[in-house]
Length: 113
Image (cartoon, rainbow, N blue to C red; front, side, top):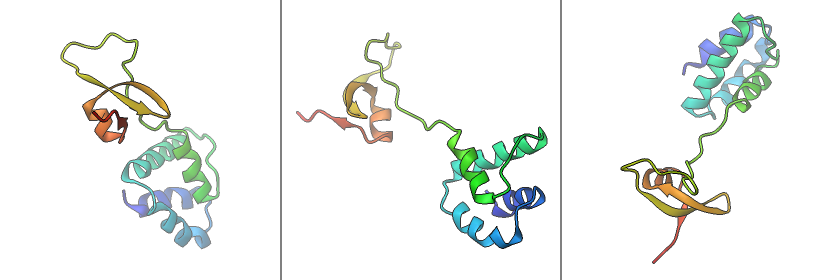
């Protein structure tokens, strides 16, 4: 996501030009997904005339925190859909039943045989 697009929104909303370089450095630390979420959320809020902080870094942070991070699906105690294969793995300190894709994606601990 292009920094200039988010900066223009924030600047037009009252962000100080003095904060542009610091905001750019912060923006570049974010993942593509976080940048997209922040841009989309801030754009929507400004169109709806909802509150967006005048401090550009704080505005970005506040609008990223509202998003829920993805988590693996634990099938323990659930009906497992047909064709889905699950394995025992540990997530956030608790054992559960997860797909191989989630085990790999979230780097879950598995039992070693």
